[in-house]
Image (cartoon, rainbow, N blue to C red):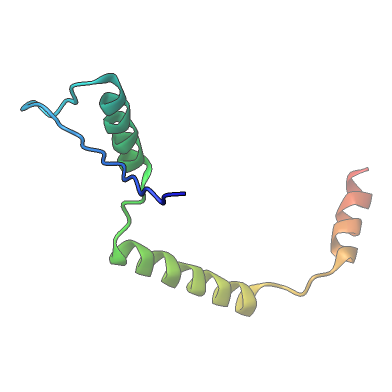
Length: 81
């Protein structure tokens, strides 16, 4: 048996206006555009603000939140019934 190695070559050619010339190439082009549209566009500043606000809210919750107690909720429920 011979080991014939076959290689597949894919080329995408586009016209001057940016549109692909065949249906398969159009589909590939549209899929690439959809992926580009749904990808994250957050930069380092967005990530830093989100992280710091999460840390700040967590610290405020730890420092300012009251102790968890079901009795307070039960008292409110009893008075409203």
